[in-house]
Amino acid sequence: MRRPWSLPALRKEFNRIKTADPRFAEWWQENSKEAYSTGLANAAAAFDNYAKSKQGKRKGRRVGMPRRKTKHKARLACRFTTGIIRVEPDGRHVTLPRLSTIRTHESAHTLLARLQAGTARILSATIRHERGRWFVSFQAEVEREITRVTRPDATVGVDLGVKHLAVMADSTGEIRYESNPKHLDGSLKLLRFHSRRVSRRQGPDKRTGQKPSKRWEKADAQRNRVHHRVANLRTDALHKLTTAVRGEYGTVVVEDLNVAGMLKNRRLARKIADAGFGEIRRQLTYKGRRNACRTVVADRWYPSSKTCSGCGAVKAKLPLHVRIFHCDACGLVMDRDENSARNLAALAAAATTGTGVAGDQGATTAPKPRGADRKTRTSRRSRKAKAARAGGATLPQPRQTEARDRRQAEALTLW
Ligand SMILES: [Zn+2]
Image (cartoon, rainbow, N blue to C red; front, side):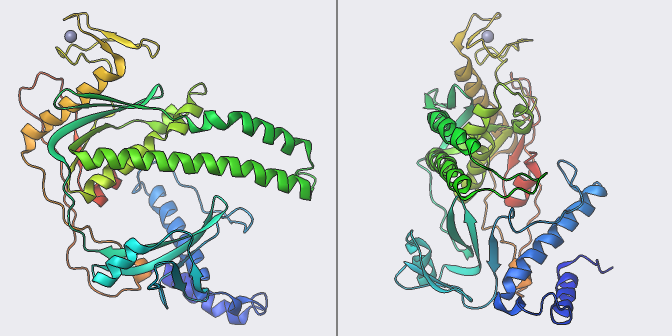
């Protein structure tokens, strides 16, 4: 059955209406057709999500009926799937339909080299306005050589926390602490100053229809710049951390943290959001796929902190303020996070004995943008890789899942 909100149906309706309806008469030709297509594609996806959620075919929180988006609040974005999309040979300019050639702030040499070597093909380009800047990103099909990690046989357990951003225990027993940069904390004072200034000026008011004053807008923009800087610093630090971890270890064990739930704790929410737990796990998973390495995700209810890494005894309770782990069974005394990281590292060993070698991971086929590329997909991967339980290990065996390819990783991500 043809859905009335499918992209072709919406497009057809828009093409009919844009010439017939006088409201479009003046301006629709001024913009690229991709601008309308982007909006329609997003609307189609939103309706799809709503329908699937209602039928119980979609994971996660219930998705409501799509609402109207105003141009004042929507993120400005447009995805080009057809026309001239290329990186110019100097690696400093890109050419896009309607927008012609634009200089980029960052060099596009890496992509350019791949394009020239014939190992990459651009499928689409998306421009978006974010954090006060315009970005262009390319979706490309890339033939990638698998980069070898420095220690393919080593395993690391990553315990995320607020005190230390990450405590990493590897299979040789080495412990590394990654300090928490706390980017937001460093800017709180400045934010307080800016926010006060904003609130003293004449802001917008929905109830009275009050428009913000020019001075308010200026102050608001200045405050936003602080937020943007914090976000940029955070992104940079997280990428450096996850790239370093994935460049070294063959297997990474992470916890399946309920970040959305943790954010409900009003005393810890700000610090947890600042640390970016969810993002760390996302990056570790996809960067591992790129290196053909394993990611083991510990079950959400696996008591990594309460279990003794020495003898396997599990404590009934361990309040958050207790930073040192004392084992009642064997007398082990260890830093709380270190104990937890060691437990996670041990978990991978148990998973390995069950499944043997991790499967190879070829290039995952990227979804083609809006059917612009009509080539038939040759390989369709829908492997369900599940690590078998290890027999007779001393640890209490929780359910373990391995994130191996894209589709599965998405199925695993629960927040
Ligand atoms: Zn013990």
